[in-house]
Image 1 (spheres, rainbow, N blue to C red):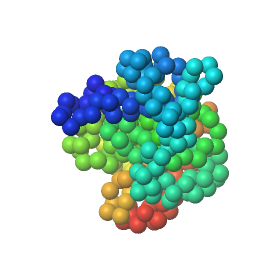
Image 2: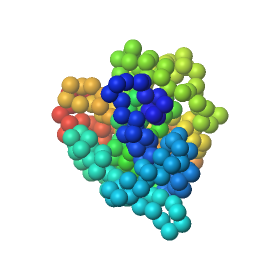
Image 3: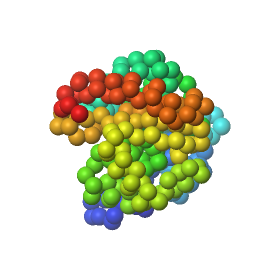
Image 4: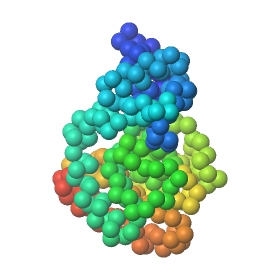
Amino acid sequence: MTESDAAPSADFVQSLARGLSVIRAFDGEPAELSLAEVARRADIPRAAARRFLRTLEQLGYAIATSDARFRLTPRVLELGYGYLSSLSLPEIVQPHLDALSHRIGESVSVSVLDGADIVYVARAAARRIMSVRITVGTRFPAFATSMGRVLIAGEASDRAAELLASAPLLSYTPMTTVDPAAIHQILDVVRDQGWAMVDGELEEGLRSIAVPLRGRDGAVVAALNVSTSTARGSADQVRAELLPPLLETAARIEGELGATSR
């Protein structure tokens, strides 16, 4: 949510919202930004961007380079550490992701739903197949991703409809499904079969399969996926090769989460 999206409130602190927008401006592409780039991305005046950047620098969350650019420091991870630690999911899933990635030779990830986006909370990368570098904290639109469809399908029907209604349904490739009725039909299929496959809808040449991860009460708490290139084979071949080990890994993770049986 940007500063302009926030509903006016007597309790709303604009300076905090602006400071957070400056941090969010650093999305990793590129890692270093100029003052003008930060101001544009955060949608704030240059003077305000300068003050926030200098404050972050003094607190150790950012550093200024010799060519008048800025980058975040590893200390910024402290801001999300409390959430990830309390969740405990990354620590539980990481060994399973490493083992699965080594077994199948592909990148595997776990994400959770945050509004109409998915947020990566754990990942084991075998090789880079996307033009955008994926790390913990990377966000993508849920409707166009296999993990997002699994997560939305795991919500109650009214909540799923609400999430889709709030999402900008943009065409990321010629294959992106943007018709709301078609997406709802896809979600119905995902609920019935228990997994989702997305083929070139977020990025051309990228195919991914995802399955849900359920908590102790049986509710979907996260999604597990494997991403590969369309050059690996047909969709049927990839599903036959990768879905079984994906489901096996999900079952092992759910066992540690104390999930009820599928």
